[in-house]
Length: 336
Image (cartoon, rainbow, N blue to C red; front, side, top):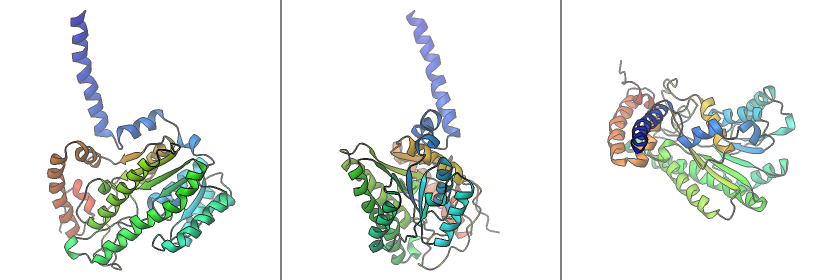
């Protein structure tokens, strides 16, 4: 009998590991998030009727968040600098959901203008009476080498991505602690967990966000119904490269490059909403080989350094060749 059990275990354990390995090859998120997507609460049920404030809602992930949340039946507060783009997003939400005009508030917001944040938060709270979820999505990326980048770029990245996000959070958090419930979801990045060339300032700002919200989460243990969640996406199809800072503040990116190899924005946002609906504290969202980097940096940092240095060199080569830097992980740069 014992021999049969041992034989069965010797067979089942390798099969179990093989199944997990195969699943990991095709995975596009961490196992906790994927399990929630298969067996957890559905966003359509958990997020219906909730008031969600989205910053950076005029394009990319923020825009897609608005569309999917509208279809879930959430009440929306849409914020970004460009009011005309926010109105466009609102119209699309209304045309493709059951929401009425009064269910969506367009609230222009500049994360750099921190003195305006208190009044903006009051307006947002007064419009619907409360805020259930704050999604900190606003910010900009970077595409420049450190040796060529003006310090003013680093200053603006920290003030926009980090201090702007902290400022909005501090305006909303007292409201949530008073109510005893709420969710603050912050879009970080894979480079918030591990650095990458061409993004020294951007990576620093995202590392700062990771540290801030991980610390804040531990401060709020007396408020168990307040979720502090960080989202760490890999490369996603969006306007983030087009809108990135370069070596000078007002110098645009010269070549955006092909974005087709990146994760579709719709898939990234769907996984985000699953995580929010199921109270996931940190979400890793990326296609392979990026997802492998998350686990490598977590469990085998020495190996991760070797791989990062190898691929980082290709990333810089692609950048200098006028290609999208992230395509370094998929193809060799073409210089002609």
